[in-house]
Amino acid sequence: MTAKGQGRTAFAYLVPALLVLGGLLAYPIYQLVLISVYDYGQEQVSGGAPLVFLGLGNYQKLLADQQFWTVLGQTVAFAAVCVVGTLLVGAFLAILATRVRTWVRMTLFLAALGAWSTPAVAGSTIWLFLFDANFGFVNEVLGIQGFSWTFDKWTAFGLVAAQVIWCSFPFVMVTLYAGIKAIPGEVLEAAALDGASAFRTAWSVTLPLLRPIILVVTIQSIIWDFKVFTQIYVMTGGGGIAGRNLVLNVYAYQQAFAASEYGLGAAIGVVMTVLLLVITLFYLRALKRSGEVL
Amino acid sequence: MRRWITEAFVLVIAAVVAFPLFWMVLSAFKPEDEIISADPVPWTTRPTLDSFTRALTVANFGRYFMNSVIVALIVVVLSILISFLAATALTRFRFRSRTTLLIMLLVVQMVPVEALTVPLFFLMRSVGDSVPAFGLNHLGSLVLVHLAFSLPFAIWMLRGFVAAVPVELEEAATLDGASRFRFLWQVLFPLVAPGLVATSVLSFIHAWNDFLFAKTFIISAVENQTLPLALQVFVKPDQNDWGAIMAGSTLMTIPVLIFFMFVQRRLVSGLAGAVKG
Image 1: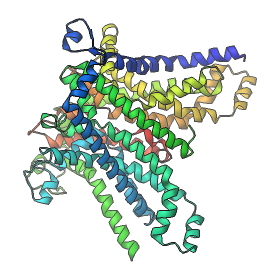
Image 2: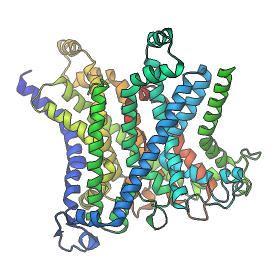
Image 3: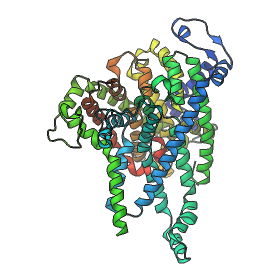
Image 4: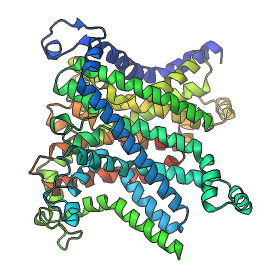
């Protein structure tokens, strides 16, 4: 086939994909930025009122808004708690999994697989029911019937974080377990022969060898937990009482679709995208260092 | 002795992790008076299908279940076809903008799709003006966005599978008189089937679990809601029908659980990045 013929056939094969990706990803990304520089409210959407170009007006409004900073802080703190919790639980169980017989490990993995695969909406609802003030099993066991976990800001955040950790730790556990298993036995034997204690081996041999994998699961968790939407929305009823349980994603949604401030919602979307792209750059560098083929 | 303690501990943890799911299934089968009892117990002596019946009739869950199935299946079929062609083009042919396209494929995977709700909402609104079936309040809008979200990853995954098929095979097929079209669909397509299974399971789960876009696009057409949204609608403050909600959650979780079992081994080897609602 000639070079030109190759190019033409390749293009023909690519047309459907290019159409879908161009129309439904590339164009919306461009639109997102565009909407964020306009005053785009209910009058413009349904009434046909003229669009007012604001430039960076929406961004200025955001940066001057106390609530934006509160929400941003909450998002970072919430993601941090989820990431640390996920990593600690996942790593701890991965290590334990290497020290038990196969059937015990399979039981643990099976349970984790169940948590992992539960759809976010279903998972959130189950947790809400388990922690229900009056009919929840947890309150029955703790003997605190009538206590509402979702009323107080911090218990609400804690409950959502626990749910997120519940469905995210399996990924970390399974990946780290695979990583530990991939370490050649001779390396550990050599360490033991040299008289290293179990702790010393874990700290000076296993941990450095696992570093690339730990980095990847950490950044992957950050990316996920930074944009949690469903759990917060379902469990706190759309961001908590007076919006005190908002995170960026839910905040953007509420600004756009509840308050009809589409321009502002788009601006929050841009801020989120930029933050995540920065994290992603670190991710790609980590991937590259861990030898993954890109 | 020490291993015995570790194992007991691990089993307790496994029980705690599995408990929410156990509680979901148990509550789905409990009679109503046991669910709204002030002293819930972790067993039932009178299992019943009442909650499932209520979920399927009163809450019309059957309809929403079908809606979810339709959206997810169409997304899977279209993404298989489109990503297979694109992956073939990107691995079997040499052309100038190939590298650029590959890099762009990587970059778009990093964009948080949640941030795109506002522009996509307006896009679907204008699409609906000319083609109502793909506009707001119709399942077509959900098919379109989930197709777009699943494609970059599917293409990326399939590249490896297509590249693994030796070029000699194509030469042999051509010598035997097979047209390029026949080679594509009768030789290459079956050979990359394992890759197609893995990617389509992931596309299915994505479309199945989606809550945000269903919530944004399906505003007033109650009959076109999908499962996640329907489940959310029946959660009412202070008067939840927990039995029906748990029955609905069970119906929603089981298909994903089955599919997850299928791909779990692939997931471990790094594919995991794509799954999570």
